[in-house]
Length: 84
Image (cartoon, rainbow, N blue to C red; front, side, top):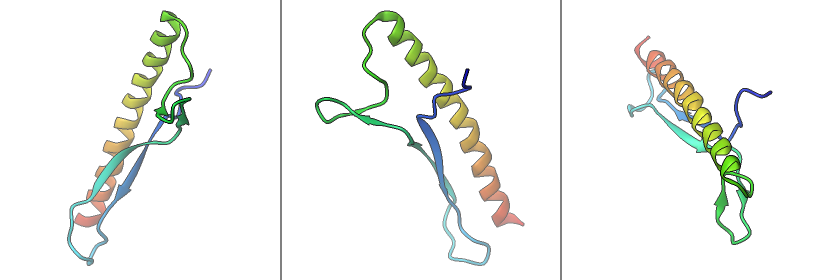
């Protein structure tokens, strides 16, 4: 079984040493999305039961927790690049 659902990812931007000063940052982004039948962005497939809703929400929460850790690591890397 896969360890997460790959709905979210991290994008980052950091100042280069000696470049123009600005604060490094990360963004949590939607990596995987599907347009719904009415044009909205869907982050789950069509859910037809309480158990499906619970299962997908649980997986989304796990994926957000995973990407939060990734974002913190990336931000520390960016900050370290500037201070070295």
